[in-house]
Each structure stands twice: as structure tokens, then as C-alpha cells.
Image (cartoon, rainbow, N blue to C red; front, side, top):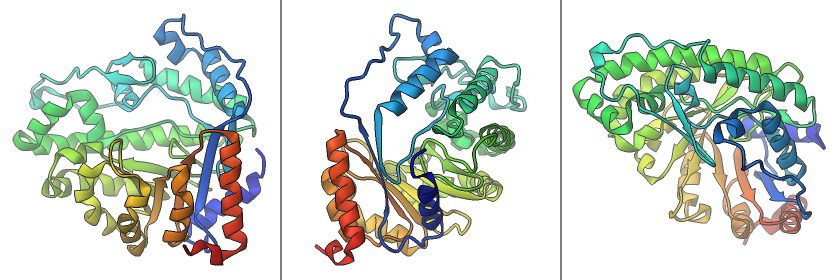
Length: 358
């Protein structure tokens, strides 16, 4: 990977909030060339998701046809969709063109009828993700970084198993069921994470995941998309205890705060000293990054890291409006030429800090 040593040092500065010159900026764009890869859309969806050769061909094609600027680097991770963690416990998955979703097989079961939740290591999905990670690690060999697959334990896994409507009912009728099952899932998460970390570090140092941040040791995204549907009081009672266990298990962590409905929990998250940062996802249809500088400042003033997606046209403004320490901007450029222009903008501000003031 090109310039990998410099990039690693920049991420270490980010985690320690020592990037005093500018925020980290991860710029990606399609390269200015015609792709020769042809997606095998004539194949069944199951094969396109689970075929190892297809996965590796698609991964290499995507990496070869992506431009990486500033602190962006080639990274991939095997993926069976956002509900794959629940699938390891026997929840069936239905595959679509671009995502997959869980079949809520426990939706109608009474809570007292649901036994202990345990990972089924003979489960098709679990065996498949192990096979995929192993193959990708062998394929990468320093050409790209292999991230730990997307894992959603806790309440989000229960949503996959029970369905959002039924889990909302459970919060009122049997909150103890939620708390006990979340802790069972936490132990499964630790076991799976340990195995994924062991596999991915065979030829590489450190860890990453779908968020793209690199760390020299064990870090992961913590999240609870279900939190949009519950009150701060329920968040405290049902979510915080399991979340604290996740944070103590990991070396570093960033909480994925997804959507305006989740902002009601930000103050509580900022009180957690074990939590290192917040990824603020404003969501489709909401104002973009330049409208959320008050939230960014609030997170930074609490001593936390910030990860946020920035539109190309907002980057100059954002570089001038926020403190650089511990913040990362993710920028998806429309073309390689636009990405290079954004790199020049970042470099000019790095060389002349006075330009950072609008």
C-alpha cells in the first residue's frame, strides 16, 4: 500500500488528538479509466454474495479502480449484510442486490420460551464468513488492508431476531429479557471479534472495519440504531450496561450515532470516559456536515474524536471552521480529478495554516 507508514502515523496522531495541523481527510473517487470488470448479474444472488472467487474478483476490481487521497487507503472486509451477526445465531438472511435483511424468526415467540442465545459454529453463515475472511487475508498480503466484518451485537441483533415492533413491545413488557439476552450476545461478540482479529492480523498490524479508521491494536465501531426508537431513560436502563462491557473489551471505540432521532442520546454518550469518539451520521434528507458544526464542537469539547462525512464542496469551509485535533472527514469525490483538487486544497492549508481562516 502506497505511503502506508505515513498514513499509520497520521491515524496514531488522530487517536491521540495530536493532529494539530489539520483534520484527517479520507478522499476516495472512481479512477479516470474505463472499468473492464463485468458483474455476474446473471448468477443467483446467493452465489454473488457467498462465492469466494467472485468476492475476491469484485474486491480487487473495486480497489484497482478507486483513487485514494490524503489518509484514505485500500481496505476491504467480507460482508453478508448488516444482519450477519444475528445470522450466526440461526437467523435466516434474505439477499438482495445491494444488501440483505433478516427474517425475524423469533418475532412471535414468548420471551420465556426463548432459550440461551449461543453462536452456532456449524451455522452456514458463520462458516462462510470465516472462509471469506481467511481467503481475503491470503489474497491481500499487503496490497490492501482487511477489516473486521460488520458486527451488530446488543439491541440491534435482537431487532434482527425479534423485529423492531416486537422489540419495542419487549421494552415495555419484559425489559429484563432484553437485558439478559443482550449480555448473552455480548459474550458472543467478544468471541467472534477475537477470532476475526486473530485471522485478520496474520499478515497485517492493527485493525479496521467498515468505518475505515485504522488503529494499531483492537478497535471497533459500537452502535445501537435501535436507540432512535427509545427514550433516554430506556437507553440508560437497557443499552448502557451492555455498551459499557463492549467499551471495556475494546482498546478503542467510536460510537456510530445514526440520524437525528439518535441525537437525544448524545449527551449521555459524551459522559462515558471509556468511549473515544462519535461518528455523526446526519442521514439522507438532513442538512449536511457544514450545518452541524455546533454538534462537532460539542463532541470535541467533551474530549471525544469525531468522524463525519463531508461533501466535496464543503471541505474548504469545514477545514476552516473546526479544530483539527481528533477529527476525520470522509469525502467521496465524483472523479479522480476532483479528488486531486481536494488533495491540493488540503495540502495548501497544511503548508499555510493562515489560509484556514475564512
